[in-house]
Length: 118
Image (cartoon, rainbow, N blue to C red; front, side, top):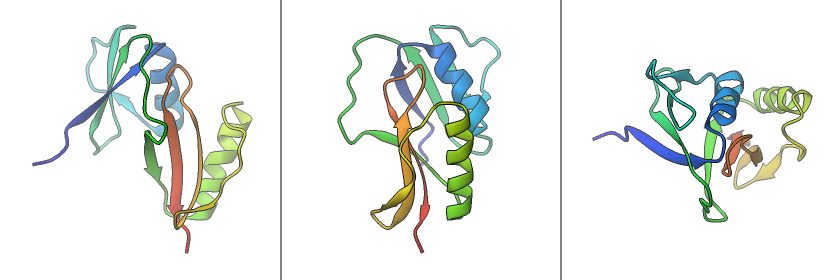
C-alpha cells in the first residue's frame, strides 16, 4: 500500500498552487483545476490537493517537508525564496538536519526544506 495524496485546506488555492509549481516543481494532475480545488503532484511523487476553506487550523508542529541532497542545495533554495520575498529565517541545524521553514503563500501551513546535516 502506498500513500496516494494529502489534502490541505488553504485560503487561496491559486496562490498556493502557483507558489508550489514555481518553487517546488509541482505540476497539475488534472486539466480541470479550479480556484476551489486543485490537484498537484511532484513528478514521480504523491499528489497534494489544495482545497479552498477558511478557519483551518493545523497543529503547531504540522508541516510538509522537502528533502534535498546537500547543505548547498538547501542554501540555494533558501536564496531563491529570499529573492522572491518568501522566507526570512536562515537555515540552521536542528534534529540532525540543515533546515529552514516558512509559511506557504496562499496557505496556512508550514513548509520545511532540509537535508541530512552530515
